[in-house]
Amino acid sequence: MHAAVGSELLQALRDALGGERVSTDAARLGEASVDKYWKALHAANAGDPLGTAAVVVEPETEEEVAAVVRLANEHRVPVVPRGGGSGTQGGAVPVAGGIVLDLTRLDRIVEIDEESLTATVEAGHNGRELERHLNERGLMFPHYPAAAEWATVGGYVAARGSGVLSTRYGKIEDLVLSLRFVSPTGELCNTIEVPRHSVGPDLTQLLVGSEGTLGVITRAKLQLERLPEARLFSAVRFDSVADGVQAFRDTLQAGHRPSVIRLYDEVATATSLAPVVGEELDGVCALVVCEGPRPAAETTRDAVLALAARYGGNGLPGDLTETWWKRRYDFYHPPHHPELPAIWGTLEFVVPYDRVLGAYDALRASVAPHEERGLVLKIHLSHWYHWGTMLYGRFVVADGGPDAVELHDAVWRDAVAAGLGAGAVMNDHHGVGLKLAPFMREQYGPSFELLRRIKRALDPNDVMNPGKLGL
Image 1 (tube, rainbow, N blue to C red):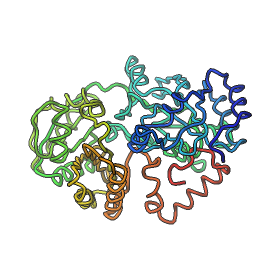
Image 2 (image 1 turned 90 degrees about the vertical axis):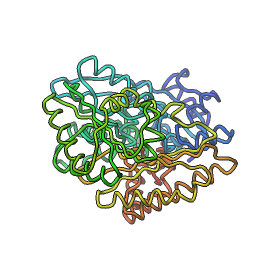
Image 3 (image 1 turned 30 degrees about the horizontal axis):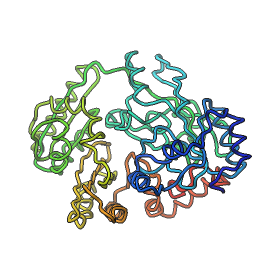
Image 4 (image 1 turned 90 degrees about the horizontal axis):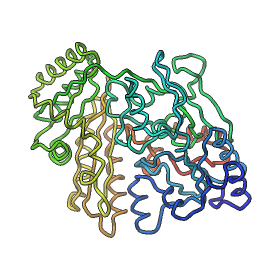
């Protein structure tokens, strides 16, 4: 495998796509060689990027994607699929050089089936644009990730992402029905059209979360919903995280499905939620959204609030949650989102209910030694399941100083060890990329070798996004 792209391959790419869509311009290469991974941003800012593409290509059709991948495989040159570049794990960083495959020109909505409530959409289509188009028709794709402004449909699927409405509608793996993809050797393939079948293993789910290591997703068939008749906003204050967890565990296990539950610990309430909604808040605060036909939404809301009261939850004005809904993307822009020279990251774990509080305490204890460097950890729980929930621990150090990378890595190493030791699983919805790759063997145990065998079988020349997922 060669990081460089020779003249023969470069000419073949130009023949396949046209010269204007094959770039070796230094500025373009630099732009396409970073995503939102802190270490990638820090390294690029220091003039020493983690990896730099040799060429950026912009196919406009699935057949052109297949042609690029075939050429990369024949020449044994790495190829890195890229959507909006919004990933936080380094999944789109070309650490082995080679070809960055920019998919944003594959941006068509191929079909909207209002009878089946599905949409077939090309991988490069922007999430916010998809939502705008669907809303005009009284529809929605109920996958509202924080990165919707930048992210693409292919990125949603490749990183096994989630959105703020996941408690009611599920994560991306629950919302994608089928896929079209290009294999590592350049074949254009379809998975079976619907997910509920018993004709062998489901190839769709093999591709979901594969982060470009097993092929290039080119289009997805997605499950839609009609815009809800009512969307009702409530807020509750608890005395402790434990009380909130018990209340919402009972909510889910009783069969109630709010679309949003966000439970903020004391630090997250004061330093994350309060500044965005513009209110003085303290304690453990929860935001709840219930939606659907108005009578059903009201019934769900009343049941959730009754269960919250059973565990000492006191009602807060519902307009707090409505304000959060309107400003929910503000968390990811200055001044609410940090910038260099700060260090930041999301220490994220998913965990069954019987281990939630132990994992929460372990996560807090793991970062305590770094608090003398000014580290602040704010934790909220925002994706809830019948069997458990997730811990979204956002850490920030205002100025990393000269040893910023060492500090960043130490925080991650300590936190992952603590989470896995407490019986949690690292990461609910951000993907693995480079950031979590070193921990994949420990997470999977002996079965990790099976993943590596699948990778070798599908991608014998190891050209697909090398270095990611620990594969």
